[in-house]
Length: 563
Image 1 (cartoon, rainbow, N blue to C red):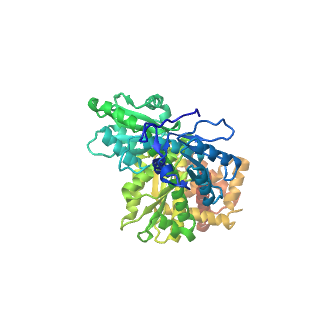
Image 2 (image 1 turned 120 degrees about the vertical axis):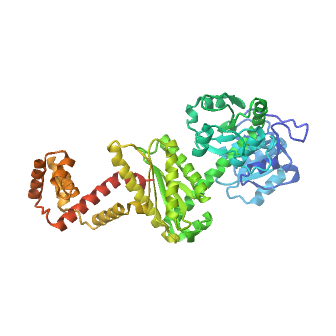
């Protein structure tokens, strides 16, 4: 970092300067000020410096110094406090690492410099960006009445000032906030992106985004055949791209003023986006932890429910949603599942007036309230509405299921298990449809929609656990087919499917009736089967059905369980 000298001739705010008290208010980073005094709170701040004791000492006047890796009592820290005080630094930030506040306070007061303590788990890089943005934000024109990090309120404020509908987008193309002021015109692109909370084209491949990234300030993007002109700005903090702001062109008579206003608000926008990102990261982790506790840990489910504000008396149901991709772990799959989480959150907020959902691995779990006698109809409608917009997220089909309603928190894990079982079943069914070349489509259902095959899967699991199918007729036929390249299992399956009707078997197998009769004769003779015995037919049919379900579930359901 180049040396930067601050010559404050006027104690009032100048461009790029702010008072320490204002910076702390903007940062809201859980910093502890060990020696707050009226004098050091009024100190003017111009920049931020990550300090390295091995670097050449530079002018630090007006700077907030981050003492990375230093501890109280070390020679380097004592030297830093002495130099900072003599050079009129604005403040020094350190991590306490077990040091008592009284000791830090004494050191700060003896040197006459403000000392701030950062949380142990604070990320220094993000703290630098937040501190630098706070300096710029505090010195910029403020937007009154907007809580830091509330990007929807900030978008409304920007829209009010610029007279154009506003959207705030992150570098991945996710819409983080948008204005809702009445009377401001929008186009189809704005309508689609705010509904899906995602840009239609990833910013990395969009020429308009690239032009905005390359510009030094707010830019006017001309209209196309599909939409209207826009004013846009790339928002950065400490050199890091945080996202972009897009405003529907308010018209020639207002565009110039809108461009100037957006440039003035750039520092404040960066501060809002940094806070929103920090809050989002923390909120998603907290939400995920609470939902995991709610559905996996019955002993502590009541605590999680209280934290989430859930009312179990009206009933709760767990929904499980994912995207049936042929592979997971790619950048596209991560982006798509994150977009699906935003869609689930948006639709749930509209339908339930609240949303409790989290991404655990590659499965999204959502807690659905169950109000009234038609709660299941509401659950189905929510899934269908999510499915209706799923094509805007991924070319692969949405798979979603809702477990049964629970009126006891300790039973909510059962609803989760049912949702997951149904999800696996739907994934299996989608895989079979894909092999047949059928068109991919959203597959959404309630648990009770497929209760028979799901119960048969449980029967198959019980049979396997009890060793009932280790060496029976079906296992013997399967081994014989593998060894001799025969198709007796398919013949037996076709026989049971058609209730022994030779003509139907021949049509399904695409062979002559006499061929079917020959195969049945060879099957019964080779394996000593009596297909006229109803109990033997029942067992064979049950074994084949559960085998088909469990085999496909293992192939496709494994992906769900790994998440």
